[in-house]
Length: 259
Image 1 (tube, one colour):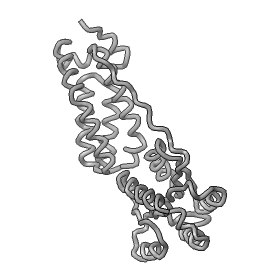
Image 2 (cartoon, helix red, strand yellow):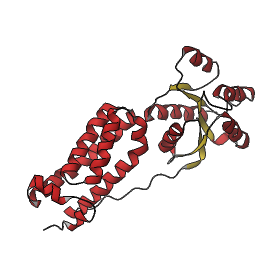
Image 3 (cartoon, helix red, strand yellow):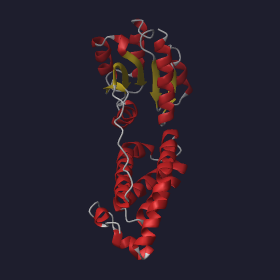
Image 4 (tube, helix red, strand yellow):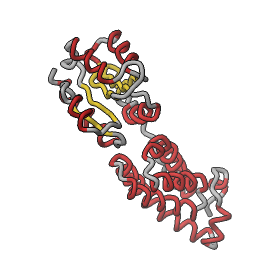
């Protein structure tokens, strides 16, 4: 007989589950089914997060919440419920900022269940080290946007952030331009705005060294036309998703590799 203390000592509410399943044999069968499908479910959740597909993301985290609730996985159920509600509200920023907590708890509880069932636990794979000789410069006065982009690329690149155009110019002025593979630049910022940064880059012939993409909440034709008067990589309208950001960074890397 399996030791249910492994579950209870790790926060699993076995008692509430037995109100549904009746006995441990049925509970164990349900755990087996859960473990057989949860890895695929998490992979699909990740896929929809990256695509910014909040309706399908909400459907899958709802399913994860239900599974977790039935099995007494209280913390996972709570986290999945929060993601369900926020993704239904199309709050992609909440999803990104709290995604690691959801996946971390899911992986923790999967290993708890595998230990209980006598299966080999999943070995955690360490993230790839940051490529310190390649830098992305993010220039935006929004804490949410800077944090969002940092979370996407921190494991692969050194991500420098600037709160406004002045900080960006200070970074550029003290940096060896060769290691900045791209700049994501907001236009509407205090002190020194994005267009002033673009003028500086143009006047100092730095576009040939630093590919630039604009990130902006201003979708007016006048602003977009003005931005494309500079040799930028492209314009991303807020709100954007991880897929959009990755595509523009890949384009910058391609341009940078040909310089």
